[in-house]
Length: 225
Length: 225
Image 1 (cartoon, rainbow over the protein chains, first blue to last red):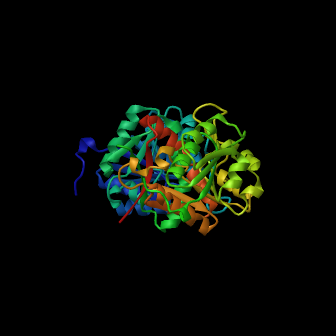
Image 2: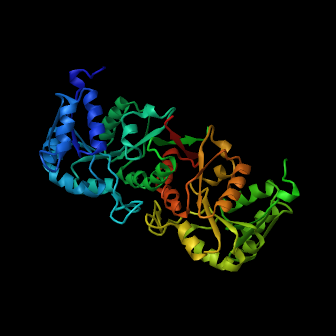
Image 3: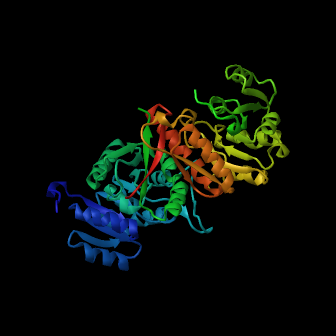
């Protein structure tokens, strides 16, 4: 397996122990990065399990442990719990770092299908950026299932991943990581307010998942020649 | 030019005299249908102009005139004005008919970019269906610019148009019209509540239009093989 030269290896924090966090964390370990998975409790069972099955470059701890460890941090918590998780992670642990916000503010409290806890004139990405102004929030990967996030080749042909955020260099770093996942088409939508657009795709995405009975699909933007 | 045999020619009402209404109306005339464009006032200048440039199968009148004339009616009014326009058109004129709702509830009153006047737990499509229960509302074509609506070949390769609505036969009729416009890939999302999904794509669509500086693009859903 091809692994990054040591100099290119990153320390990455993953917040969240669900499917998204473990899938992204495992991919980053496979690519040669050191990854610490964080959760509310230091001894989260799923995080322990994930560490065991991912070898010496994988570790786990609290949200604060993972945020402090990472040069880059991925928010893979449930969207409605993200602000609390990031507060637990600690602004000082996140300060100046790139935070890749992969979450969607899906609200399951009123039954199915879920609605969005925030949308239209605001977004989760913007809420996070406002709450943590010293963090470089980059919204990305939230418009698809996690198996596609780390393996776009599952879908034949070109398809797109969106990024948005206020810091150009932070977006450049995230684009490099996306390329290392196999992404060829990365669409930069501009500043973090574009998170409204990508989060609001979720109702259509959920409907398509119901129709296809599979989460293995993605959107491609096609243009007139 | 190929024109429908007389038996296949429809009477179509178009509500709205803007770009969307005139583009759809002209295409339907070109396909051999009889089209009446309706607006708030019977002598709307743009409707008069449109009639002049579209020949004997084109006519114009009030919203009520157009709704009464059409076997199928297209709602091409501004989304925030649609319920008022349909009320002016008259429930009795629309009763039992297929209403193709092409509108988006874009709210420009709070500046740019527009937000949605209704979204998340409701949609314009659903509001129209609730307000006019005897009408067969089919939401479609609202995820793209009107030049693409009537000429999908402008974008190379396959790309998608969505339909949703509560009445299967009504959707079948709309799918036939979409095919006559050149659409090959029509995705049926189910009942009218799916309008939330297609209307909520607008913020991303608007962002992409700003990025590309062109409205000539569309979405394609790509699936794992």
